[in-house]
Length: 291
Image (cartoon, rainbow, N blue to C red; front, side, top):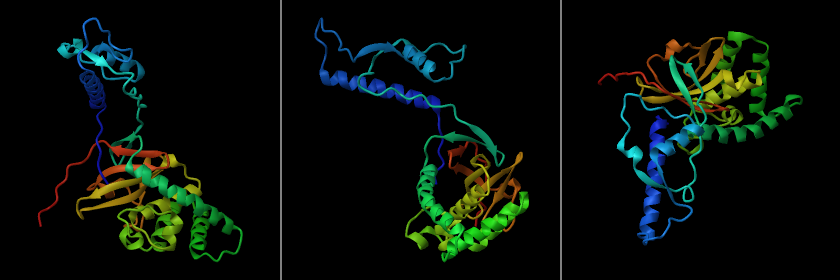
């Protein structure tokens, strides 16, 4: 899993640079204009100040500080290439929240969101099989186990329900790496696949997440959290569950539900749920003791 940083201001600079480069290339390929020749309808000149004003109207950009003098480049004429390159799309204002005492920012797309979507497609087929067995005698051992956990957890409330789901699925899933199970470096399995065979840390999280969804929890209250554990040098995944103003954590390495204090020495990287992916904006400093 990779930690990704975003800079919106730098992004607009890249867009303007690309526009300038495309136009320069087109002009070079066409050769110098002959005296009296007009530029084609797809090529006209504009100032960077004009272009930035248009971008601010479509999507807010940071205004320059009043004390800073205008750059000489702001009055330099460069060719515009509206007919040669697509217009940049305005990005939505990102949503932010606090988790593990750090701020997260929602991002479009992302590697974790893509893995979630692939798993969710398999889960829809599994869910159909589970519901077919719900009211009948079912010979499928994995489905019977899933339904038994769901029924027992449904009779509990609050912290007792979370604790039961955490312990029951920890006991029901055998730990194995994706290489051992699927021969792949990283594959996110649906809960039925995991209960039937085995899974690694994110597979435990997915099973707990979707079990809680079936018990009435909303996506806004659930997050798969990817983090790095400096003490072991390993990446890990846990399930964050919002309870009132607090977050609690279900972890295949913990028998009981944990609080944020348990993860003080870790480096959170990203979160994902069915609504999309978010990245942690700040990372704690840490040291790994020399061995």
